[in-house]
Length: 296
Image 1 (cartoon, rainbow, N blue to C red):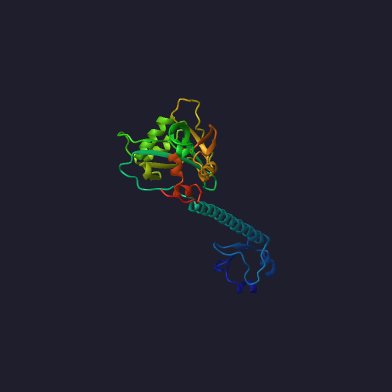
Image 2: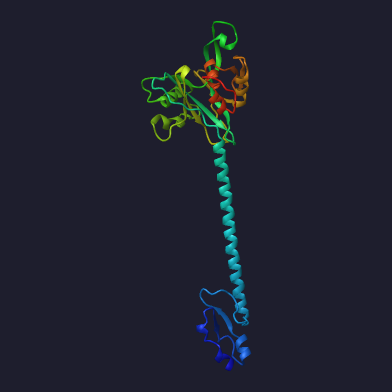
């Protein structure tokens, strides 16, 4: 009794409240050890003044420890996932920074023709394939290292055509010519439509002064995409589109011979002289990961 008279009432303890109803009080010791430790709101699980804690109190402390451990583990897992996402975003930004952007230049208002270079990039962001077309054209034999005069040859060139009054801009010209010459086998015209309508950010466009031609660059799919099927069974098309590997282009452009042929799904063909000269421009070759400089 003297012991309990010296103790503060349970309601005055800011951390603990002792419930005297758990066991009958027979002595100071039994009364003390027989009481259940009840945690007050916001209190930490601890023992003050060396007071023994009952089994129920120890179970409560253990339960809170497991809860705190689970919360800490969940926090660590969330932090790890956030770090992985941040690292992936950083790698994407680095890959975008290393990407070689297509050449661009101000298009003259009196441009006479327009073309489009559809291309596909590999997983690292490098250009892997360029869409050209096979067409029969009259070419100077001197440009093909085949003597003098002119002759009809099947050559590779990018889709192009002259401007017409109905065209709203160079993107509209390129889209119209692409549809007219190939009948748009893979639906690629939809990629040019927003720029032709003046909606959103326009596609990159370069101006080839020697031919008075505006050339639009348009990526097909995301990085690492497979080139879509563009071949057609129709042999009456003015231009038969075909994907050409950039490795083949590098080999042909590095050759001193203008008649160097490229291997495609449709056969082996040389580049059209104007297409060859444009692709040999330093900005275009850099875009294709070639460092060989040349003049416009």
